[in-house]
Amino acid sequence: MRDQIFFGLYEAASDGHVFITDEGRLAMIYSGDDSGQSSIKLAFGDDWASWEEWGVLLGPSKQPGAVNHKETSFYFRMSPTDHRIYFIGYDDEDTYQSSIYMAQAPHLTGPWAILEQPVIPRGPTDGRDVYLITSPSVFEYDGRLIMAWLGWNGFEDVTEVWSFTATSQLDGIVWQNPIETDVPIGMEGQITTRPDGGFVAVSTRQTRTGLEGIFAFCADDPLGPWTPIPEPLLTLAKDRWEVDEIIAPSIVYDPDTSAPYLFYTAAEHAKGWRMMMARPR
Image 1 (cartoon, rainbow, N blue to C red):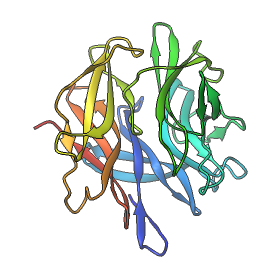
Image 2 (tube, rainbow, N blue to C red):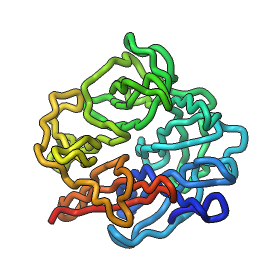
Image 3 (cartoon, rainbow, N blue to C red):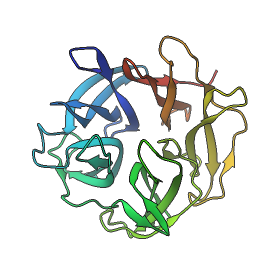
């Protein structure tokens, strides 16, 4: 599904969020290319390892005039006729001053409308000077919606990254009480619900060997405390696919067997980004 950019010298498909549709189909929204801009695309899976691109959901060919670039998307179904995508949007690739935006549609395949203003803007947040935002996750807990995300204090000169949460009274548009919260989703990880009703968060961190690894954390309350699984789920392989880094992980569970599947992005900086999938041995 990787889009060819720069005459095919660079290929990209990244930041996947996998979920099960109302019809029981496997679906993935991910970051790809639309008319030279980072955009949100859709693919359907025949099984966990076989996927077919459907096309663009959020991009200049669908919503001309909306925020230029879109990444790290998260799908949330409010009702059978109210589908949401939360994503980061920014206009300038050089400055990357991203905020969280929301798009809404009556069906998964659209038509999608993007709210003009961000639902979570960059800027001062709970005493932190947030330069850019990444990685929204949205889920329902205790009769309300909770969003978690990452805030960075810079772009190429970043020295600190914080995690935040905010709540919404089942509206999903207006969010209240953004606070810094210890949620283990860096870098660009996601939170999903477990079959037993709890939550799992995944994040990229350094292993004891010095290589990047993907780690998992579990909690009954999404605001914590989070209990780490001590060993990494996997470690950067340094093979033909996992060359430079592994980021943007998320876990999804098979609705029939409760088996977990880990989706993540592998990078080879000179050639592009690739969607990857792993299963327990």
